[in-house]
Length: 111
Length: 111
DNA sequence: TCGACATTTCGGGATTATCGAACTATCGTC
DNA sequence: GACGATAGTTCGATAATCCCGAAATGTCGA
Image (cartoon, rainbow over all chains, first blue to last red; front, top):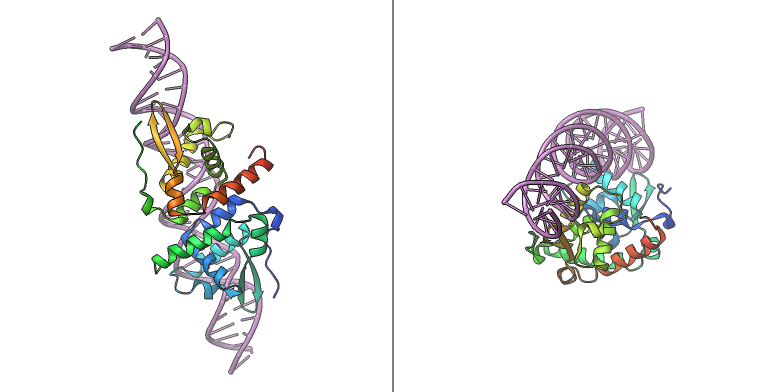
């Protein structure tokens, strides 16, 4: 259950966070991770037609931007959005973004 | 004073908007454009140490994402944030982003 | 121990970003 | 009107980044 390295809360900056969210696949992953914390990588990516190696890069970008934490749990990685750190460092930022992402995804059934 | 082509309000999507804002130079340009609408390209880029050809690309990305309008005014281009379209299509999105960008830039004097 | 599973790493090809140099268009001036 | 100066864009080459198949890593269950 050890965690993977991730940047400290106080070292997070806005541009990398927006960059990480500025990709349709990552935005959808973040939306799902927010809705179901402690899910595994493959569970969150279910149905998306994206190869695993590409997903692994997406998770890395999201982790390095500070959006998520990953912990090794057996042969899985559990994804947890860094909700507290994000609302501490960027108050009011994620709520509207995720709300709009939900709204958009409910139109585009299949992303 | 003719406008340059830009995507219609209803065709704007979230990911390109976040992508456009997910670069430190563009985020700063957007912050300045918001503070001083109808400014010219060079006025907004003043002090940033970024070559003109690179800036031109940044403006294009921001225009294609729907963040700004550009109108040709003599030998200048005037930049106007598409505030109405953005708040119509993405209500509640830009305010927190720009507020946080202002807060961050007041720490990092020189970007 | 062995094989299946979940994910990462590696490597190469494809896309995108950067920026100097040349170009376009417009204004002010003579 | 011709000319230089001004404000941006386009072009082309190099650099950085992204994408994804194949191989590798680490873990579980039998």
